[in-house]
Image (tube, helix red, strand yellow):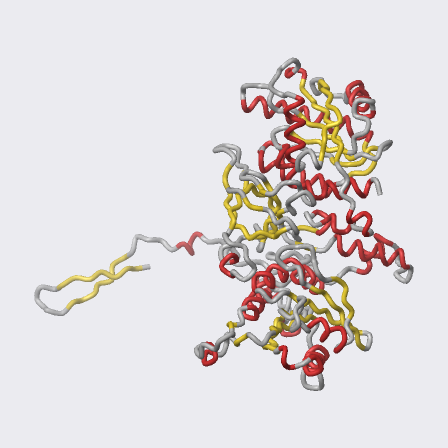
Length: 581
């Protein structure tokens, strides 16, 4: 090995190069055979599964398949559902036609819905959106029906679409003709409409059948925010289910293979819905008061901010800030939104309050995943929307029974005799959180001392707790809050340690008297409580029905109590109605 060295000969103007011996030895002299060679099969072991059936293709999957020699041009994938987006209305001007936008026509507005929904649907990654343009009210029912039938079912040259999303023309006005188009003109069947939600009340869902094939139609409101919110809450989960499909074999194992049996089919549909992927949720506290709608629950657009509980815990809470004016025509309210906060209906026919107070917590449905590594996402059975499945009939749906609340306060032995957990104050906090005295009242409250947790289960304590819950003091309660006190020590870290250990003992003692567990409600309790008290995330909250009474029992930390109730309040009333139905 040699290096080059330059020097300048004084007798000449020419720059010359001189080769001199190098003192650097080659690394190759020290290299053993096969050192820099990867053996065949060393990257992926034989018979390894690198891509499972039903898995969504991501960039890394293509690289894996290519690396393994799989021909990408013949890779079998499922076709994305084809979805058409249509706007309706005489007042609309196509936002894609600049010449019309510049004409300043009186009584005309740009069509914001199609650009919004086409982009929104495209971002989901679970469908292939198609722009169907604008139809006007003056086109008439027959002409619009004929055009849409051709679009839906296709012809020799076009393939047709699977889902139609139309905006406008679905409310109660004289020019709102789209429901007549879909039903009378196209033979559709209306499954639901006039929804109890804000925004989106006129939303209607229709199916149209032909030759053993079915098309889905979502007729959304004409205001752009309403259209966007309803697309997010209704269309997106539907497309996710269409794209992912269902595992018939797994459904058969869960419900039985005879799908011709009506009860089996009903259970199969319920299983599919409960296990459908829906929006991820977080529980967030609001940073300012929000006026509640007196007529309907509201999906309020919010921005989220994640804040650490303290400097050392590594745990966080979410704070939600309203995006401002929520009128359904104000697209600006969507601009910085991270999700939709589910606010209850206000007033005496709702939660009992007219305002959601600063610091109260509510579930937020996220527009996008918190992390791309979060498995298959939230299932409907674990969602805050889960109680929808329990609306079996109008009687149950409309029944809003007053809650009769019994309270069991559990104190550790070290907290015995301390006065910082006051039963009357705790009862008042529960009633306020449930919407006031018109919604709930305290029947009684009792105190129970929890012995120091030993290695073996404490049967005496379990029997004592069971006797209190089934005894005359709590009789007549349809909801029983078992509140684990966590304020018994002046040392913050010690207090939380005591509450955690006490909670474990309490939940162990409750296990024998629980008939059926309500896991979805327990998840809501945990989310709400942990947003207020970091250690509450470690509690195994229990929610379930008692074996010998028509009552619901709930365990919670006293610190996380308000937000736990706020997260599950709406579901709680319906759950009690179902128990007593």
